[in-house]
Length: 340
Image (cartoon, rainbow, N blue to C red; front, top):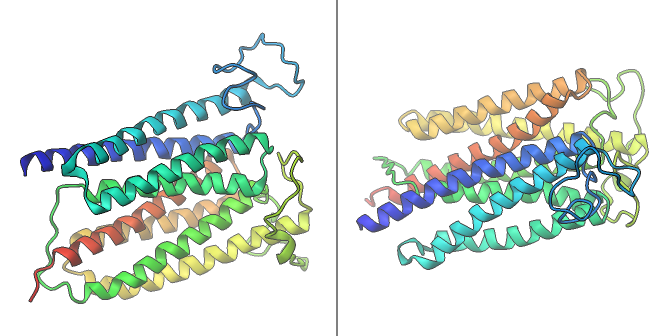
């Protein structure tokens, strides 16, 4: 029993560190994308045939070579490689130690294996298919899914007990909380699609796209996932009107997800007055939601400052993790509740 507690504590700490590195990879990926360095290295996994980015005096046959873009892309790859090592260590511990081979750990480990393999493939295709929006969007969402899986692994392996004397009413909150996670994840997908199609600056006004003009919507063209292969998509290739449709869909999704989370919080807060852990998670979620809305609006008003755009991605993943924390704690309380 002592060995199992020590092992789960070590596993949770390792998952926590891996989650931190995953956040770093996501932020570096956002930075690389925002400075148009996604093709800073036109080959994969190296950069111009080397595993270290070329120096300033490097004479590339490609006249599009830019030193700082190559380094940005390679640093992103280095951090992704470190994250992969963390994930492999976690998987080895789960499958090699009987004390850690719980059903939930095995399921999460299998998910990590599948996500890591697919994410590596997406990383290659992102370069070889020249930032094809469908691939880049999946690559970004894969990072969010890996972060979510690692964070869930951390939460379920912490040695903490949260007993509630009467948790029957808390079980009623679980479906609404799961829907909140799904709604937020779909909204993040819309944001990823807007980002990979370079639609962030297509609507210069707020709250409407063009406050003094009628914007025509092109839903079918805006969300066509079968884009031509072989085109260089850096900087975006869609017409402005289609990008405006994507941008406004992201704003509408933000409105819907915000309204849902606020309604859910208003319903849940009175039922959580004796549960400090759940209250803390829900208040953190609401705080991050307000921060994300402010950052999103400032991105439009101030024409997408680099630090603000990166923060928008970071707060999005933190918001998702905070909602996952609420769900995991809620499930733990329900499972540990004494049976009448």
